[in-house]
Image: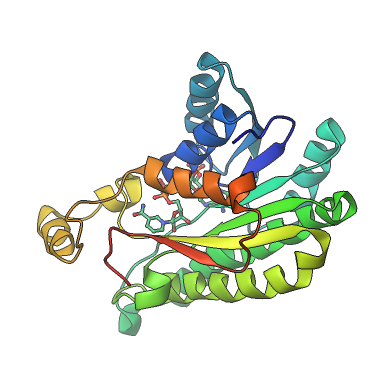
Length: 247
Ligand code: NAP
C-alpha cells in the first residue's frame, strides 16, 4: 500500500492519535505535514521520529478553527508541493462538564475546533483535490458522537456533526474521485484519556468487549486503509475502532 508521491496533512498531528497517523502515512511513502496549535516541541518530536525512520515530514502550525490561518497554511503547502492529496481532520479538544453547568464558551470552543475546524480544512483542500480528480479526506470522530456520553454534550454534538459532514461531503465530491470517510475511535490510550481516574477507566474497560483500551496505532491502521488503494471504493462511511463497545 504505497503513498509515494502523495502529500498528506494531519491536523493535530503532533501527538496522540495524530502522531501515530503521521508516522504511518510517512512509512507508506507520503510527505506528511504535521499540524499543531500550541505545542511546537511535540510536533518537532514527531518530525524527528519520522525522519529517523527515513520518512518525509514537515511541520505546519495553525489553528484549525481560524479560517484565515487555514487558508494561509493550505496555500503554503500547495505552493511547496502543487497539491494536497490526503487530509486527516484529527485535531480535537474536550471541555467536559454536565450540561447544566456547561459554559457557552465550552460549547463554542469544542464545536469550533472539532467541527468547524474540519469544515474549514476540508473546504480549503478540496479545490486542489477537485482539479486533480483525486483526494482522500478522513474525519476523526468518536464513539461519543454515536452513543452519546454524559458530561460531553458539546463533544458528542460536534462528533455527531462530523458524521453529517462526512456523508454530505462524500456525496458532493464523489464525482471528482474524492472519498470522504470517518473513523470513530472508542477509548484509546492518549493524553486525552490519561486524564480519567483509575476508577472511571476500570468502569469503561468493563464496557469494552475486547476488554482493553485501544492503541493509537489501531486508529492509524484504519486511516491507512481508507486512504490506500484498498479503500478506494469506500466513501461516506464511518469505521468504528472501539473494541466492540458500540455496535
Ligand atoms: P490529544 O492527544 O489531546 O492531541 C490533540 C491534538 O490536536 C494535538 O496535536 C493538538 O495540538 C491538536 N489541536 C488541538 N486543538 C487544535 C486546534 N485548534 N488547531 C490545530 N490543532 C489542534 O488528542 P487525541 O487523544 O490524540 O485525539 C485525537 C482525535 O481523536 C481527536 O479528534 C479526538 O476527539 C479523537 N478521539 C480520541 C479518543 C481517545 O480515546 N483518545 C477517542 C475518540 C476520539 P497542540 O499539542 O499544539 O495543542
